[in-house]
Image (cartoon, rainbow, N blue to C red):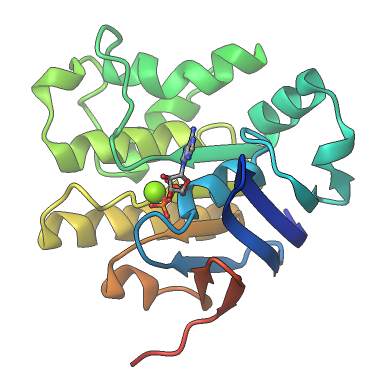
Length: 219
Ligand SMILES: Nc1ncnc2c1ncn2[C@@H]1O[C@H](COP(=O)(O)OP(=O)(O)O)[C@@H](O)[C@H]1O
Ligand SMILES: [Mg+2]
């Protein structure tokens, strides 16, 4: 899925978060975004999915202008074509692992047809489908979130510091699972991260600043 952002600006009242943000993500491309805390990385990811509003500029997914769509149209586009992984896993505690992963299919009215078990196996969680989230480690929970984000084969995966709560060894395993599955499906990936190791896997690294977004130059 292609993503194109032109001249994006976000403000809260008189306080500008960022302005003049322009970037393109090609189908199947992996772009990492770095930047200081509070600079608006999460806000930018939310704008990419039409989950947040912006004050200037355009966000276009596969040629469709998100700003010109109704809330309902945006919700439908998101449900079909976008997957999310967050820092705090956001796995539903009262559903078992397989039910959590099946949620996007349920929302789309699509049958499971083995995709849930296949995704669990792909992220190294085969046999754990009946467990409740409280019976899993942090690294396993994040792999549940990755399986859930990709089970409906979205064209675009947005990941917001997905390894931020994990120790380095676990983070590496989670990134491996995330990358392998994203590549396998040919999805585009936009990853916000503080991890040098995670960013080094990307096709491109961009740095977000208040006055725009630029290729990251390592110090
Ligand atoms: N509802 C809000 N009202 C005012 N400011 C907000 C609100 N939500 C977020 N912000 C501000 O927007 C900025 C960007 O936040 P965020 O996107 O979470 O940054 P990052 O993910 O880069 O740490 C922060 O400075 C934050 O304080
Ligand atoms: Mg953030």
